[in-house]
Length: 549
Image (cartoon, rainbow, N blue to C red; front, top):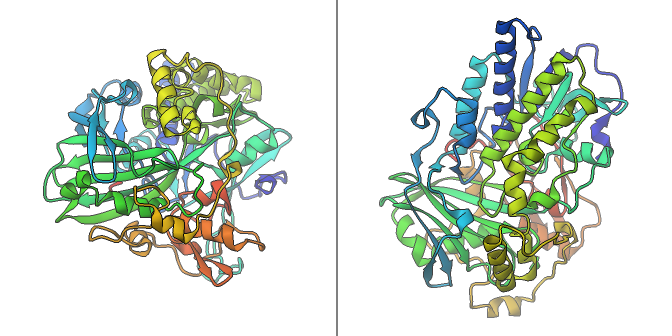
């Protein structure tokens, strides 16, 4: 990761900004909007900082193209960011009406009371793509410069301070050399403050925390979510969450189904990446889940119109870096780990962190001081906010399931009724990559009849292959792009087998004893960045193009 820390001076033709947000998701856009508002109000009142150039770099071709989420949204951060607006003006599809939680077996669904953390009265069903595009429009109206198609490939630093970023080149051929007329060299973007709003497993965030040796009590852990949008013939009248099958014996997670409209349903499966069976295939499990009686009736006669995948930080309170700021830098949203698995929420936390970062940055600009000490109020404000308060209250609910499904359920119930005080202290964890993996023999896998993850993917009429799924993601990456996945030369057959099953987009294939990497298939879910081959930023505009996810 040290290669992403660039100690040389910025290019003479660098683009100068005052503040640059790296990542155009909810956190970055909310921060940019709040900062633009503060600048405008201060200048109008006569005690402002003058003109402030604010930019948002986004690696996708357009805002929202790479954003994927559930999404059931708490509107709290929207009300904070747009106090003059009413909920009907926000980019939500519909309020949550009815909701249900089920415990699944392979052939049945037993309805259970919704845990308090999963009750969604007052929340709204939404498309994260639509939220991001709407926020982008509000940002541009506020004078923010939106720069899509520019992934950041390195942090420009001077001493211990961050002074901007360098973007990835565009138009390289398969060998990493300029490929002709479409070549665009890297661009340096300098800024007094750089805000990393990269989302989960942000490459620059990881590089900065490693470089500055910023620690957390526990390492960050992750889950992988695979999601499909279905146009359906029959409306779904409630939001649905499930637990249990197909994850009784291995892994932690569950499924969700949200009605975005009477004829549109989002269905997804989320699985923790600390599972043991190296042949577990999250995409394959989702294909089996679709044939469960609970979901088959919803989907039959319909059509799968969009597909996507992404990783989710789920370490919670104990995995937060001790500081999320430094000289000339703040880290917000999923990049910092502001996700509460117990309530399945992250969007309003991301937005609120962006808002708090904007307020700290504005005060630093007014004081003409963007040092680590001057930006420390950002981390302090988040630590006093409902973001960290919620994460602390639910700090051990996800970690409790390290003890297995049954014992984890008992511990999580105790945490719920005691407000997080029992189990007390911290449940220590390893990284997902340090959790042991094993390859079950084919005879063992064939013998699994209870729906455990070891069972093979069931074909069935509703199933789609990984190839067809990638097509439905809108992925338009050119075939001769350089590989952005750093894979070792000594990958064993057993590890290669794991990568083949792990990747939901079919990037990895076994070719005899060799591992073949189909980098253009990648949808930037970052799953193998957690467990194996490292992900690095690729040229702008590559990857998926989600439209309604």
